[in-house]
Length: 136
Image (cartoon, rainbow, N blue to C red; front, side):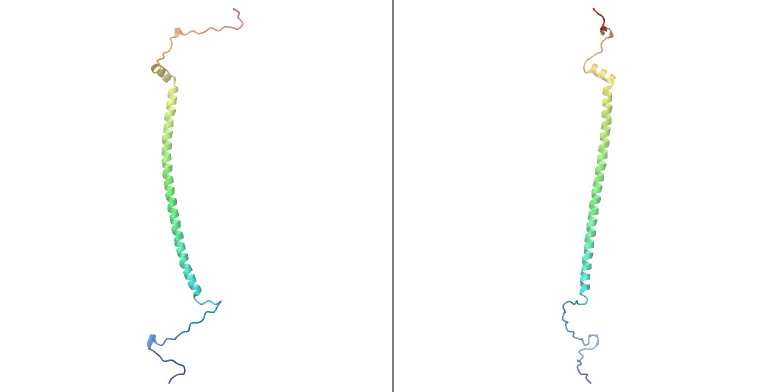
């Protein structure tokens, strides 16, 4: 017995009769269900990508800064070594100045380089002191 308005079965089992659905017209102002979810999923993918890009940028910034810190450390070490050399040179120059000012070195250089000799004590005469009140 047939039911009025019933359709015939085309196959048996899970691939049995399929119902046809009509496309529903989209009404203005009304969203279809699931449309917001698709946008959220697409936005979620771009936010993950943005987070990965931000993390990569931070990693590059960190590497550049650590390289700069290492280079600055090497410069500081070089400058400290140069400062130690200059201080040693300064101490040597101070010693040379003190040596050149000593009377023994001055006398030795005067005899050797300039050919000077001290005068004998007998050849040195001193002028006598005159008083202002005395008349000639």
